[in-house]
Length: 363
Image (tube, rainbow, N blue to C red; front, side, top):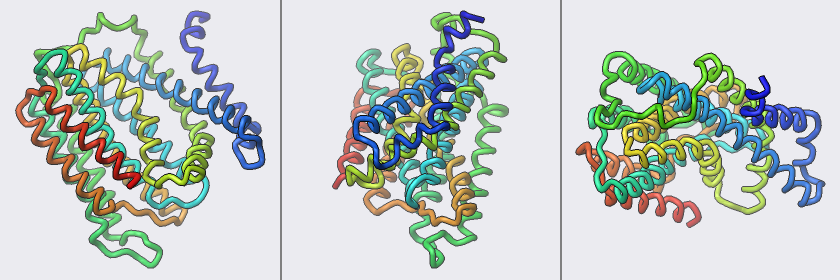
């Protein structure tokens, strides 16, 4: 028992953080306190949440290793997306109304993952191994689902009618919810039942012996749920400094989406980069494209439901420049990952689009 407590000390830290912020710590994040106290409190909160997020990924990764692909990476992907939905929901319910937060977060995930993380992974992997391989059928399955969902949820709302409050029409809302859930359900059937071989690279199987000793599935499942609860209970507190920071800096609203995306995706990016370093590009592809697909398919129904419950308008349609970047990203992904083999040039091109996204955010 002592050994387990020692290994999972992060859970104790998380529980103490929950007690602190629920019993009055949130008041230190409100106006009227000195900047030193505010920064120190926000730093402690951020550190506790990040440690819990990394722990979530650690235990979901352990289950992923034991269960094997594609079930393993699916668990990791769904865990990360659940964290994202929690963070977006918390920020939506905290502070002033922000009708574009969900849109900006989903767009930030698409740009950060498909350009930033994929670019770094392909660039570094290409520099080390020159050429890396993956299952072409798998990436086609991801893109077949990602492209229509991205266009339907992030572009189409700009060209449809809205009510007096800026909300999408009931017909479009229902269409997006049904399309997101139905398409993702079909994809999950393909991934876990009928075509699991699409998401496995037989030439570069993962080596379980290269990981630290694993415990039972029950243990990792309990720990995974426990750390998820820590993040859920601290998410609303973390939303306070995120909103305040963007307001104080006078930063563009899109920066809030990028911050949320980076916080949630950081551990997954680390895991994918490690896989690429071990020449397991298929695992990185599963993580990256799986997270993008799940983000759009699961976030859209969740935020539309929240918007209806709290009676706040929500906007999903991107700005014109952002639509260009989205289309360029989808086209680039279709081209650069069309042969089953990658090199450093593919990675460099994706990174260029990501840098353009960052620069245009502040333009």
